[in-house]
Each structure stands twice: as structure tokens, then as C-alpha cells.
Length: 259
Length: 262
Image (tube, rainbow over all chains, first blue to last red; front, side):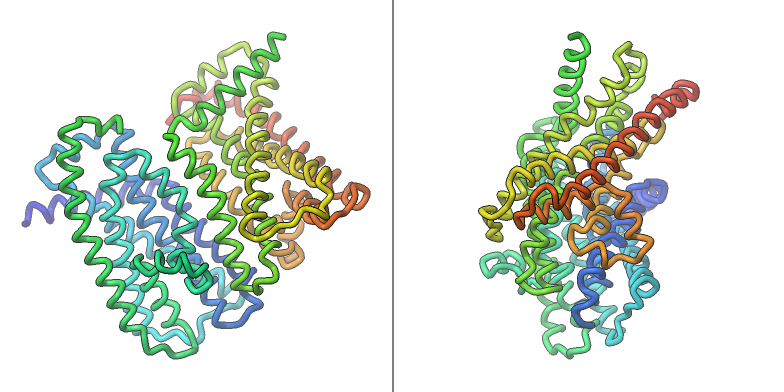
């Protein structure tokens, strides 16, 4: 167990060092959130205080997601392009442990994405979140962080064995923003699309986050936390199977570098 | 004839090389799924902000902005990819005419941008009921060609930075999404602070999008001639600056051995 912890810590430390000097990280946690928050605030600022929260927090959630999941996926692509992906599979530490170390670093950096959006909202638009409930907000943010972490961990093996997986999921990026209600409620989506949203854990965590920053009280928030956590645990269970499959497939086909 | 052949070959190879990373599924996701989801996402955000009556405004704006995907990302990537894959020194050492090489980098992306906008308009018509029966289609077509040319002009300017800069594709991301805020795509330019309005009118797309919106409402060319002339002027200035910068940075890259610095 100690050896696994040490492997995860090393992956975390190395990954964090690489991210700090990587301009893409700054694009994702600093520039993208500001751009989306500015767009949202320009569009939403005239439509009431409830909706401004979607501009203030929406850009931050998008930036958080981008760092947590896109950077995580890119970390595997980078290993492939630098010829080190095979070594990661060959070392005694399981792939899951190394991925956890990498994703923890991206999730921690991703949390920074809320700083520029809140600053932009305050200094640029004089917009604040007057009805923020600190306790509920903190718990909701924790649940959101957990759900992003689990999704990133669960999807990463796909990026390892199929190069197309990252490009396809990258193409679905804006769809994820919409399906998970990052900048507008899921109820805005067509009815036939909403069930897809409901099986995504960030949908519930995001809903809880907005509810904790809304002036209108909402009794369902604890239930949304539980649904988000439950779905995340289900993803984790499925991902264990996926990791086993990927581990075997990588060794049988020997195509990691070519995938 | 030789120059034409260089231009044609260079143009084709650049488009193929631009998508070297993509499987057919990845290409589909990038060229079809991403544009559709961009339109749908910003329409839903706009409808949430202002009500369902304005859906077409957002759909049309985002359809037109899709040209920047090719004009900005595509053009910048052609130079940055040369650097990433180690072929930039070969390009700079070749005797091919620089202007031909430079213009061929944007030509295929202009065509790609036009196709992207037409695809976006089809999606808008199917999902949001865009009715073009009263539109001035010839003028709309002209607007689409012009904004595709002018955004490629801006792409050429930033693409030149790829000669000396490792991560110029990051600039593509910033410029592409910056255009969503500044160019009247999702809300009128008049809602921006005055300083940003000045920036908006110094960028391609702003006037072109405005002209295209009027063309959809049936305006004739006389009503939008000023906008289109301004749009062309802005695009020509960026392309000219881009070519100048390309030559300056080419010299700098040669002197500093920066073509292979990675």
C-alpha cells in the first residue's frame, strides 16, 4: 500500500511540475474560464440575479472541467507522443494508481478556474453572488470535484488505447457543457435530451452548486449530492473493469504507441 | 505554371497534413459534431438569457463564426505543425516563392471556412427554422466568402508567430473564442464597453456578421457595401501585416536557429 501511495505521489508531483510550465494549463484554468464567463455575463447580466450566477460560476466550472478532464486526457496522449506510455504500462504500479496521481494534480489546478471568473464578474461587471450559502456551496463544490475526478479517472484508459477517443470527446466538449448544465439549466434542453443529462454525475453536482448560490431556497440539494456521488461510484466500478480490459489489451496487441 | 503547381500541391498537402492527427471519426467529431454543438450550446444559452424569440440571432451568429475554425485554427496550425514535425527548416530552405507558400496556407482554409458556414446555416435551418426565402442569397454568399477571407487574414498574422513560437496554437484558441465575445456573434457589439467596441471593429468578422444578418433580412448590396468594404480592408491589413511578419520572423528564425527549437 505504501508503495502504491508513493507511486501515486510521484505521478502527482511530476504531473504538477509539468503542468505548471505548460501554457495549455494556463489556457484552460485562466483564459477559457474568463472567455466563457465574459460571454455568459454579457448575455445574462440583463436577465436577473438568479441567472447571473450562471455567468459567474459557469466559466469557472467550464475551466475546471477542461483542466480536470482534457488535461488528464492530454497527459496520456503526451506520454504516447513522448514514447513513455509503454513504460507506464510496464512498471509494477498499476495504471490506475499513476492515473490517480496525474488527475489529482489536474483537479487541484482546475479549482483555480473559479478565481479569474469571480474576479471578472466582480471587477468587470460588478456582479456578485449575494445569496451564497457557504456551507452548501463548499459541499457542492466538493461533490463536483469528486465527480470530475472520477470521470477523469474513468475515461483516461480510453485515451490510452484509442487515440481517436480523445479527439472524439474533444469534439463533444461543448455538448458536455450543455448536457451537464454548466451555463444554463438542463431544463433548457429538449425533453428527449434531458435523460442523457440525468445519467451524468456533474449534472447533479452543478445543479447543487447553483442552488447553493441562488436566493430561492431549495430543499432537494442533499438529494442531488447523493445522486452525483452514487453515479460517480457507479462510474468508478465500471472503470475498474475498463482498466483491467485496457491492461490486457495493451499487452496482447502491443499497439500502445500506434493506437 | 510552376508557381500554380507549387500553389496547388502546397495547398492540398497542407490540408491533408492539417488532419494528420485525426481518424475519420475524429475528423467527423471536429468538423461536424463540434460546429453543431457550438450552435446548439450558444443558442440555448442565449434563449436562457433572452427568451426563445431570439434563437435565430444566436444560431446565425455562431454559424457565421464557424469560418474562424478554419481561418484561425487551420491557418495557424499549418505553420505550427511544420515546426512540431520538424519540417519547418525544409520549408524555409526551399526555393519556393514565399508569397505563394504564404497564400496557399490560407487558401484551402478559406474554402474550408466557406463550407463550414454553409453547413452551419443548414443546421440552423433544420434546428431553428432559418427561413432564407426572403434573404438576399447572393449577398449572403458574398458575405460568407468575405468573412472567410478576412478571418484567414487574421490567421495568417498569428500563424507567422509559429516560426519562432512553440505553442502558437494556443493563440488560435484565444483568438477563436475571443471572436465569440467581440464580434457581435452572441450579442450586439454595442453592449461592449467603448474600448472593446473599438477592438471589435478592428477585427475581422464584426462588420461581416452584421452585413450577413442584414442580407438574411433581404438587404441589398447598397445597404451593406460600407460594411463589406470595411471588412475587406481589415482583412487585407491583417494579411499584409501577416506576410510582413512572416518575412521578418523567417529571418529572425534563421539567424537564431529557432526553426528547430522545441
